[in-house]
Amino acid sequence: MVALTPGPDILFVLRNTLNFGGKQGFLAFLGIFSGWIIFLSLIYFGLSQVFNGIFIQISLNLIGGIYLFYISYTLFKKPKNHINFHQKLEKSLFIYFKGLLINLSNPKAILFFTIVISPFINTNFEISLIILLCGLSLSFLLVIFLGTFSRSFISNTFFDRIDKICGILFLAFGILLFFQAYKLFLMLQSL
Image (cartoon, rainbow, N blue to C red; front, side):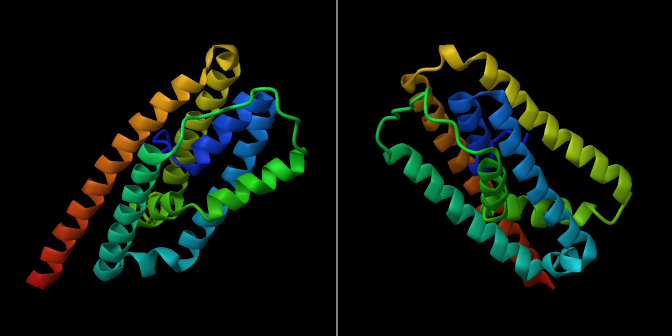
């Protein structure tokens, strides 16, 4: 579910699929997948211990909540979409590295791997890793599949509606992160 909530990664894959087709969407996904491998490697080699502290989790929840509020605000205030479905094709290597950089600089991905994945990575590491990568990959591959076959039916108005729904979802997730930070703060006070 977290992988399907719209963020820079999934929107990058969807836009490349809609603009250029399934092959370019898959190349964008491979760049993002490479970013996941980097995050998982960092967590496996000790970063998870740093992010398991209560103070760090409170900070990351607050930063994540602020980021999601900002994204929600920008989605509600942005002008109407003007998507060109027949743009010139970008080079494959460029799309791959752009996907990698978008993932590595994506606060949602950073928060996902440090807050959600990090506490569970040390128990049944191999099984957890396989389930995680399969689940995330299937979500993105579903977006590529749907984007490829719905290219001719998508309109700018439809994208505008998706942006508004995403804004509401980001606002709700931001509130949940603030609530989680508050609960952690109360737990910290009781220590």
